[in-house]
Each structure stands twice: as structure tokens, then as C-alpha cells.
Amino acid sequence: MNTLFRARVDKKLLRKAQEVCREMGLDAQGAVRLFLAALVRRRELPFKVSAETPEDELLQPQAKRAEILDSFYGDCPPRLQAASSSVVSRKPWR
Image 1 (cartoon, rainbow, N blue to C red):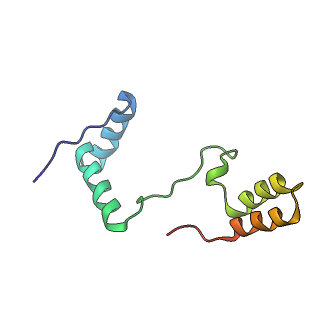
Image 2: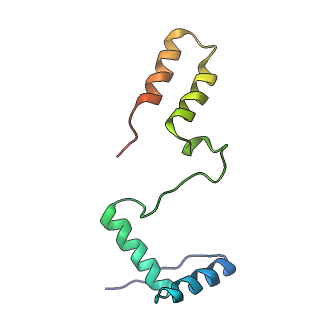
Image 3: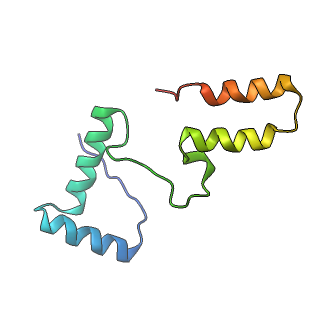
């Protein structure tokens, strides 16, 4: 059974995406279906997500996050500094 899925997309972006899809022999709806199928199969986005700006702290590499935390906790008592380093050393959720 199929269901209707709607999303608001910038008109220029949609036109450009439709052009690319046409070059690949697809339509935009087919590309969205492929994306959703890959998302379900992999249980993750089918492409790498990265920060658009170097200032985006949440998506920085682990070393950069550690540097940010160290600068934040630098003047804290040693007990809190140890806690901050253990947070950085944890593996990402997966």
C-alpha cells in the first residue's frame, strides 16, 4: 500500500534536483523513494553529514570537541576536569 508524502522544498532547489534526476533517468519522486529505502536498509543516512562551517561544535572531529571542552573546563577543579575528559573519550552512539 502506498501513501502520499509531502515536503516543502525551495522551488529552485527542486528544479535543480529534478534536472539532475532526469540526467540519471529518474524523477524526483523516485530519488526520494531510493533515499528512504537506503535509509531503512542501512539504518543511517546514505551519505556523510558534515558541518557547513568550522565553528559548528556539534559536528567537529573528536579532537576539536576535546579542545573545546578542555578550554571550557580549564579553570575547574581537577574532579570536573577528569569528568570532562571521560566525556570526550567515549565512543559515539551506534
